[in-house]
Amino acid sequence: MFSTEVLPKSSQPAPASFANAFSQFGPDREILCFTISSGLSGTYQSASIGKDLSNA
Figure 1 (tube, rainbow, N blue to C red):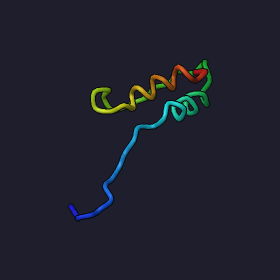
Figure 2: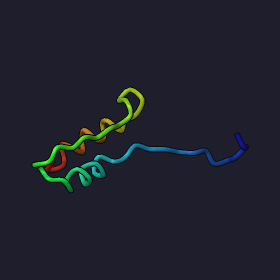
Figure 3: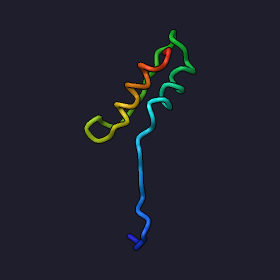
């Protein structure tokens, strides 16, 4: 790896991002969302919260 002073960063998507995506389909459609394991990432938690926030 190259030497750098700036370290890479990552973050999980916000629940609102999932809510906006899920809301595009409406309540009459089934949605299948694949995420990384909840033990390895917070993305599953964000998706779960986003589902609760959406009208899907």
